Image 1 (tube, protein in one colour):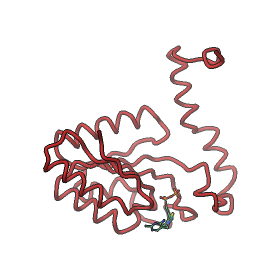
Image 2 (cartoon, helix red, strand yellow):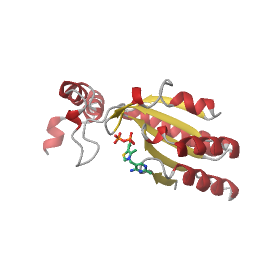
Image 3 (spheres, rainbow, N blue to C red):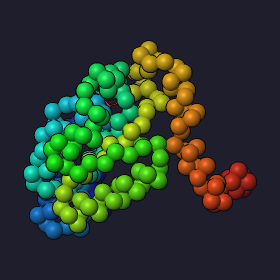
Length: 181
Ligand SMILES: Cc1ncc(C[n+]2csc(CCOP(=O)(O)OP(=O)(O)O)c2C)c(N)n1
């Protein structure tokens, strides 16, 4: 079983590296996984954690959901790098950028990352490019800082559930009839 560290912003990133290093010392066939947003990648703990993981060769997977926004701050106001993936490479961490709205691409990359992390004893960074169609929280109204049309386009044209459904329907594994039973 992986040790999973979901983050509130970025506080659990260094903890995940420590846990991964413990798994390595114990020769466990497992890795740690930690999730965070692009906003979390703009804070110091992200950088400390990535460097720490690279140097310790810790079996940890960093999964960054780059949805373009840290509450109301767009990525263009957070960093000037080409997203998050290049920062992983800069620290010597094998880094993968993937379409975060493609369920199969996510599955494939996480599967590959887990294998690499455990068998090669190394950290992996996955940057999943996506969009937050909802508000950041119940106290946030995202229509105050981004166009309603933009949110609507992502909901309609890029919805990952619809996209995955189309794929399983194309395989004849699912249909509206099957769903109604
Ligand atoms: C340790 C910590 N620092 C700062 C905050 C304040 N804070 C709350 S959300 C947020 C930005 C989060 O950005 P992201 O993870 O990209 O969230 P999204 O808007 O995509 O939901 C910040 C800085 C916090 N909750 N915790």
